[in-house]
Image (cartoon, rainbow, N blue to C red; front, side, top):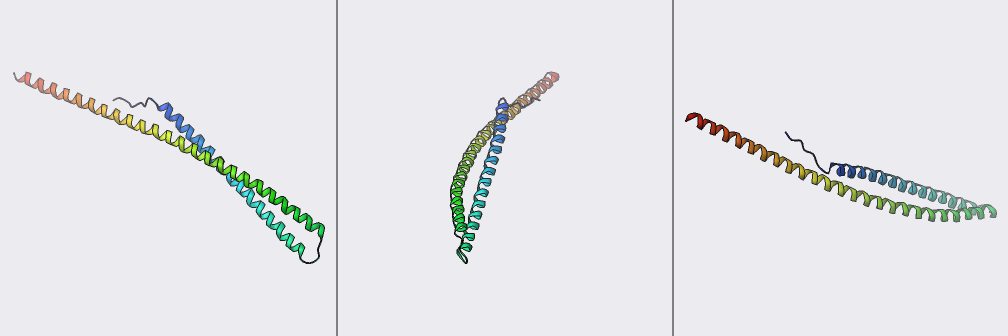
Length: 151
């Protein structure tokens, strides 16, 4: 019996490897986004701590040097938060681009898998036709031999 061999199997394997690479790239981009979001969250917590400290300093005995230091720290945190928001936005864009690349590679792989399935179906039909032809020849030969034996 003939064995099915997909003539573009190597291309399908390359597409599968490309898909795996894009999945890894997507995972890395997602991890980077989560890391940047975590950094942003930590900055917000630090800023809230400084603001709470400033409120404490404004109540009771006033220490101007400490109040100014705290205000500078809050301003510094605002600047860091702005920079971190930009980093989060960049990570989101990178994740979106990785997702689009992954979807494209998945479509290409799926297309090649469909082509392979169609080629396999054609192969099976060809085998069935060949088997049917062999059966017809065998029946015809057997029938013809019986007729010649009877004569």
